[in-house]
Image 1 (cartoon, rainbow, N blue to C red):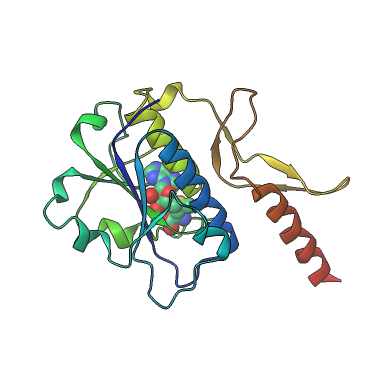
Image 2: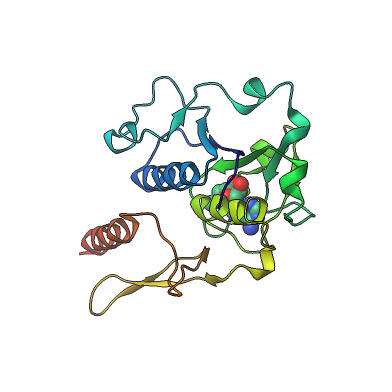
Amino acid sequence: MSGNKTFIVEHLDPELEQWSALEYKCIARETAATGSSFYLTSVPRELQLPESLKAVSELNVEHRGIEEIYADKKDRVCLLDPAATKELSPEDGDNFDIFLFGGILGDDPPRDRTSELRKKGYQGRRLGPVQMTTDTAVRTTRIVVQDRIALEDIKYVDNPEIKVDEHESTEMPFRYVLDKNGKPIFPDGMVDLIKKDSERGIDDLL
Ligand code: SAM
């Protein structure tokens, strides 16, 4: 797999939660391994990046936003947008150099915060009808535009369950890409974080 594309996550939340930190680390490492680059943009100057992210050499942090950085290349930017009318296709690897994603935690039901980027007027493409986590959306885009595999030929699972202990499991309301063993791909550390969060949730009820 090789590429020379630029993948941008425009950070849209005031905070940078642990969940996002794990996703951004995963995107940075995987994207660099394919020869492309990853930028986390619009990071407020006052935001303290978690130590775990500061240590990621493949991560490029930008305080400026997408509009400022690529003011002269707007037509080469593709916004991955769950509300777009056109699906992403392998040919979009020729049409665009820069792929833009909303740095938003997934929510159920989705609140359409990608609209904050849509109103800037970029061309949009959808990755199918189901909400993905941000790292899954970047992974899927790389597969389509770099490996030139059509969206419908990628193997996914929707709403996988994570076993948090012997009795409980928690359903993740998103679409994930499957690895070669047929298991959903989660960022390193994510399953443990989900388990920890669900224990905390149960403790809060007691
Ligand atoms: N709940 C959401 C919202 O408020 O728009 C979706 C957030 S999703 C976790 C983060 C980003 O991944 C989106 O901003 C978008 O760039 C990308 N994304 C996720 N699922 C997608 C899909 N089915 N089609 C296109 N882009 C998608």
